[in-house]
Length: 222
Image (cartoon, rainbow, N blue to C red; front, side, top):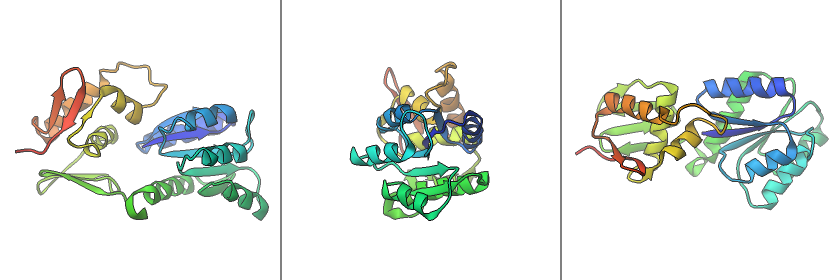
């Protein structure tokens, strides 16, 4: 899952990004409302954490502009203000949830997970994907091969998730990098190959096919 944080308090923004990255999300951070609107408008995010008091354009206007443009990405609004009027205004502009500073990080993570679950099919928990003998529960973040549960690291699971939700399709290395890591990642793009290799060791070499020059495809085992 890919998250965007639009927050001008840099220490808070970086702290949230660090924590959410540890939870397994790919996180981008911007500190300006206009830049946040531009990035969120590209449509590549699963959720936006949006402060209200921002330079360039405040959070109310960013949220309203995204909704007016037809973007339905879940938006969790943050503000140092309190009071029913502020909350009503935030929700009226199209925000999905609202959190007043100071807040507990645990509560923020719970709100994020709830919004992401709500976005899933039927408004319930994330679906369980089955490809041959492989079963991936994206809500519980558990993986089974036949009757055996396979233990994966956070990044291994995130790479597998990108493949299983598009099972049978070719998923490019660039797509995996974009959704599992973030735009700021400047390391070796061959890191994807490293994780594909570890997944093959754990799940079997024939499950993930390399499509030369194009990417990888998850296929049911014969």
